[in-house]
Length: 149
View (cartoon, rainbow, N blue to C red):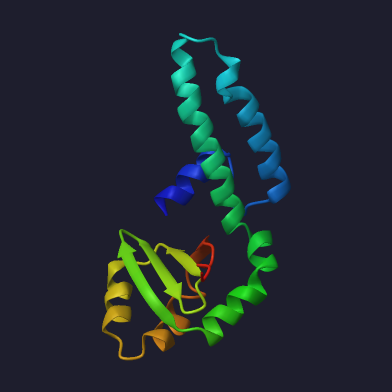
């Protein structure tokens, strides 16, 4: 949740993410903070390099959790959480990362430790996740499917 708030603040996003407005803000921020804009030896050049990486990461992150992106990928997500099993998971802070049998990995933001412990101790983890995690928390697809050799 901290990461979401940080990037929303960077891009001045109040509520819902609008891709058109996000792209416009992204372009303006990149113009303002592009490292090539500063001369070698300029103290702001190093700050600009850091800031430009943060802007690019933030843009891609916010695009991945935008309602339009979720709507476009809803069919694939529904297929995964309905027909695939959980292969692996890890919880760090408020982030729960779940890898499915089909090779896709999704991150769920804001999952408290109490919910994770219930998930961990559940004898039917997939059932618990369908009821309490999959559509209850902000999520995004985090990794591409692993390709078999």
